Image (cartoon, rainbow, N blue to C red; front, top):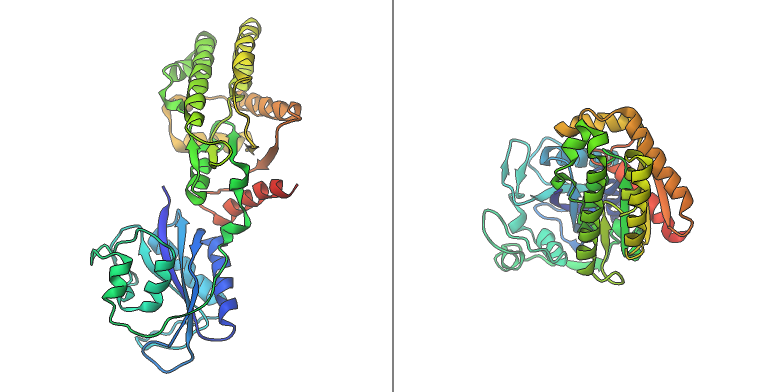
Length: 376
């Protein structure tokens, strides 16, 4: 689960709207995924004489901690020409980015207070916050946004100026309806599936791999347990996909799955003996005809060295002895399958040198690669 952060952005110097748009773009590229952006409101400068401010509020999803978010937005302010002075006095500024909320947490550090200690006294925060239609409740005052506005001591005018486009509007991944994200063991398919689902409000279908009783046995004795393992995976995937997809409308709902049933055949071809595979494929072909096909099939390619690092890092004991040549065969099996599927809408994304969890720009790169398939 990603952290949900509310940021307030203000500007009263230079091209105010342009300053805000630029800051939102930089936040989205470097800090986290900007999910929603409020309207822009003009308000008088608060606490000092100066030109009026443009203000907005945005909702952000990020893996970063509150302190890292603070560090990141301060860097963005600096890049945009803001110089923060060591003073309690208010001042005109080209850009001002404040953390208003971080999940439901209360933070009281020397350099950071959350929720923002003055948010309940600032209409230029509360009015835009109302635009987002969040079920927000102040964790200290126990008041919802509407109550905070009603009780706010600030009575200054907040004049609506314009709407701002959310960066996510450029992607429109939900047009695919059903996306299957695949990859080798340790490629990060479940992590990416969950992340996209949270950001785009999608339904998820996640493989129940950890429940398979044959998996630990297989890694200890592959020849003995390969056939029961692959048969149990096939049965479970068929049942899960049939049950889960039946709950959704494949023409209306946006669904993201971290596997496609064809992976069963890919793994079986690597693990089974020739005679076992022939029997297995006969059963698979019957099942495969009944399965809905994804509108987009995403394959996350990672080289074997990186896969082994990821497997070691996530620490599942039964995976630690997976040999490199087994992962090589799985990668080859996927790529051969993809080449053979002329009617499948496929995008292969090489993430060998990318970390889409820790690096927001790597995640945006993946979204861009998927988006390109919309315009092909």
